[in-house]
Length: 374
Length: 108
Image 1 (tube, rainbow over the protein chains, first blue to last red):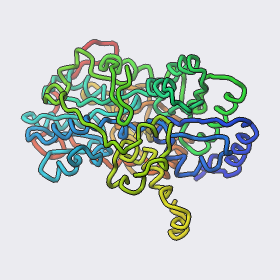
Image 2 (image 1 turned 60 degrees about the horizontal axis):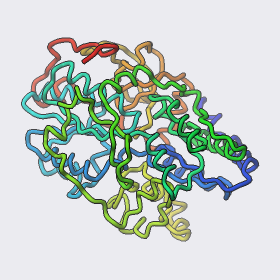
Image 3 (image 1 turned 120 degrees about the vertical axis):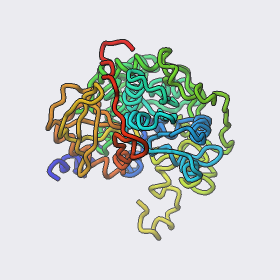
Image 4 (image 1 turned 90 degrees about the vertical axis):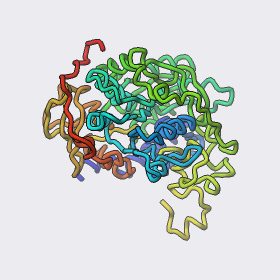
């Protein structure tokens, strides 16, 4: 445990909170973008430690959450086919579509497999030359290098029985969409640390300048988050709007150029639909022209599937920082992690699921009776 | 699921034209692709996401990040089953017949 003392130290946390209190004179709304940060904030009650004038709202940074319902339905339509071995990261198996989830398809005889790495699909495809192996290629920038390598290697090896169902999204266009909304409340951002290990943070600089908004790229540990908030508050109070790097022990401005190189070869930037939000221009990836023959949507002719979200769900407003989970009448009642109605309840990194997991759907007397929930 | 998990490189090898490694995460050892951090040596620590090393970190950072991920229940991707060369035990084993093209700087 020798490495733990420094950042566990409650005194350091108390000192950071104290500095935030001293720095803050006006009310500010700050959004954390990464789902890992959301989870850490709610689990550690960081939002409760802050002065009243600093409000945290929770952004769209969970790829499982923002994968649109119609893409889930496309995945299920493909996974039901008898010739298909459908491969996915484990997180996607529980996400309900219009008719059940991937687990239920598996229990009814579908060949659905959880993979650790996209490269596992290569082994499965070689071993099953008479079957079609389809990989559900979801994720933000962090996952793109892995998914790009699967496409590149499948093509290089001439494996014709592999295809990718691509639903890739990008963080900066989502930030731009939030800031462009007439309802926007967000004045500063905690940028996503691990996403920036791949792409760096240079591309956030034009956003900070254009919208005059501070963006501090931040880690996900409690002290990282408190320090990131302090850096954002100091910028807001002094009228600055810069990109700063709180996570410099891990991140550089340039990210990983080797990974960026392969991503640029395999993927092309495209419009993407975000669950709860709708289509955001240039907000994701599709396969580039020379890899389009690996596209599962056209190989299995599922492009036409189009699914509407339940009307009661306010996930779109939560993902944009306009509302919080408690503002939803269905939160914790008809919408819960076992029966999610929308994006922010489908994964532990979604704001509604995080609030639910740490007892924030309960009132105070219920919390006392179960000994404090979290 | 966008958080990368730090681990220690305990072995490096080549497969299918790619630099690969065995990486130790706590008590679990898994394969990871090293193509994006090709300078990595055995004994160093890397941040790994879905089987790909994305950057190198020092030992102290690796330990604190791992501990923090454990507390947040964010080590789930390491529970995914390991697929062997026989594709998980279904069907005959297979190997690539020709070494794939090196992708760095090349064209498809």
